[in-house]
Length: 212
Image (cartoon, rainbow, N blue to C red; front, side, top):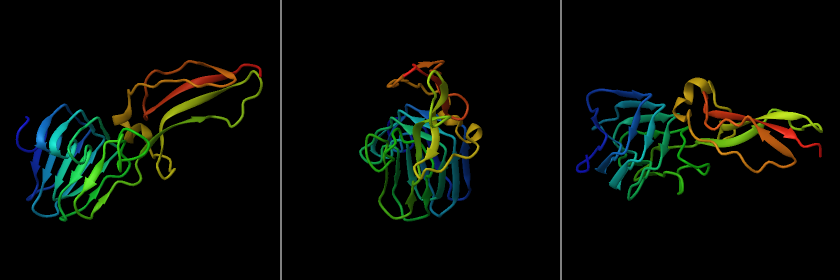
């Protein structure tokens, strides 16, 4: 790869539909669509879910995904560390069809409208990426008694609209195994910290009050 379109995958679905699930597309290079180039002369359906799309590069547009036609639904995927002149994560170049890219992780909590997230850009109407997945930390209890403890859960618990993610053990497999750093505890001691997200894109630790 490195010349032409679609460094990892080139798909023309003008006469068919397409589905990609539970796949990794990484470290590819093309002029457009470093990871995936999706073309269609008409609005044919394509469904992408639970994908890991990382480290891909496009010289022009669509580091992760380039959409040239088609009705694309993209969900519960991780688009991180892709680069392009425009649309590091996703670029949509056409008014044919729509691209619904809700509940994906673009590399930061700010969403794909601007860096440092992988960005999602369109040259026409029909791109929807809101809500996106967010990363946060929550305690099992609102208060901890002196000498008591609580379980902390860090991970992709909610989307940007503050809605809980349904069936995270099934939907968030693309976010399992990511490194987690724990720090900043106040009036307590952390123990049992999981170093990586487990099933459901989450990791846990225990915060024990230091008797203050």
